[in-house]
Image (cartoon, rainbow, N blue to C red):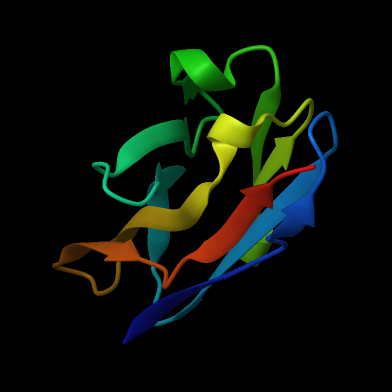
Length: 120
């Protein structure tokens, strides 16, 4: 079994910062890609940022220049530093990962989400 647990969400004023963390645990041989998605009420879940095991990053346009994704392979963790937050960043943020959980299988896992609210 594999699980992802997010932390770091909360309430912040516009222009403020938050740092989200996600750690994977359980049966893990290796993790290829990890990323962050978000979903606002009434909207589709969308990619925020992703990072490969080699450190290659990909950012959605709204995140470029403001958010930074990073990972710690030794800890099976991924982080999202969010600066200059805007009200439109308000959403539930989900961690995901492509995980080789056995010698023969790979799964795509999701965390339960952490709420980020940007409001004055």
